[in-house]
Amino acid sequence: MSLSSKQKQVVRKRAGDCCEYCRLAQSSNFARFHVDHIIALKHDGTDDDENLCLACPDCNAHKGENVAALDPLTRDATKLYNPRQQKWDDHFSINPDATISGLTPEGRTTVRVLRINDIERVNQRLGEMAVGDYPCKKD
Image 1 (tube, rainbow, N blue to C red):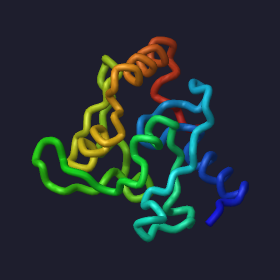
Image 2 (tube, rainbow, N blue to C red):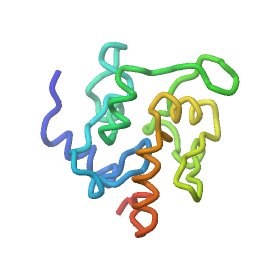
Image 3 (tube, helix red, strand yellow):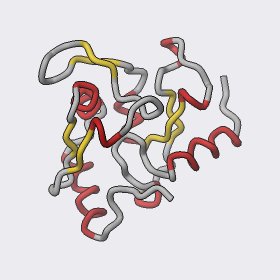
Image 4 (cartoon, rainbow, N blue to C red):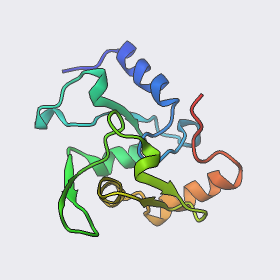
């Protein structure tokens, strides 16, 4: 299945050109952000707008086709954060050092699977934070 240009535009606008996982702005990244299937087609996901989100290349690459993993705290099988069904602030917090903490099993699992706190990614967010460009602000 292929997404239409209009559909991609709707996803980008809804996200405010922000990664819906790590809150990085498209303007702070050289590579174009990806329209991600929250539930991969391989796992019976669809091309419906409610199954699509905007993801930076790093979040998208690490997420891949994953829909769940083990919560690093409880070791229980846990679904990843779903930006269409859950509120970001309920599951994550941004720390002064630009790391992101998972506040719930879904948040912790997503932070780990997407490698959101890899040092290079944290350093990029810290730089963006220093000039007031992080976290991304939706219009």
